[in-house]
Image (cartoon, rainbow, N blue to C red; front, top):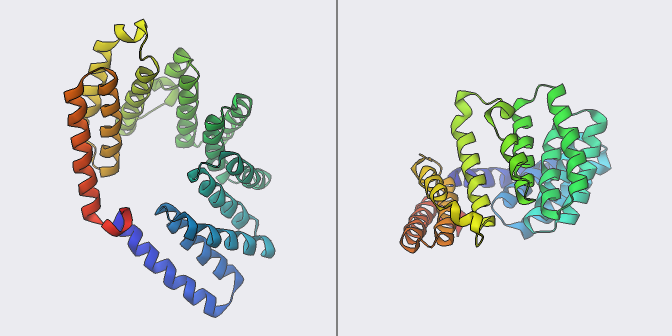
Length: 275
């Protein structure tokens, strides 16, 4: 993954230089957008922002509406990564409106980002309106994977607002209409939700009654075969926190040590990207 990003960065840098020499605004805008997005993914946000802004301005000046929506969305993602959630929402809402007018399938991707921001802002009214629109759109066009993504976000929103039963129903097999291919992903999502729930119950009598369940859930999560190093790192961090909350210091240290090994594995693959 890291090596691919390095290759993409080199490729888009060269593409940008060529586009500047040619001087075609459409080609230049695309090159700026691609290069800026790679910098964004690599977390070089100060390098990404001016490129993404210039790409947006070129699209706006040439009246290329699909490109305007995409580039507004990229700027919104940049704001999200910086924790500027209100600015991110405003920018992405404009992108959503453009796609909504054009009835573009990209509208559902924008909606997913807006739902994530609404959760972060704690804006339930905004979330519910977007949720209903997103589900209706996904069902209208048969976008089953996107519908599942939206349902999972709604489940997380319910969980964070202490609506535990509603959350469980949303991520049931029946609701997600999952196939055998997706069972592993579904299982991982549900285990993560349970771990979040256990964190919220910490300190209460209800939490103490669930210690056995908690340990079982964590052990299941740890037994899963995850091929992607960043997924394993995420799991080690989550389970480490869960073990700490259960008072299982030795097991927490095992998770932390596993996380360190995974970080070393990631860095050994491409230190210039992750440093």
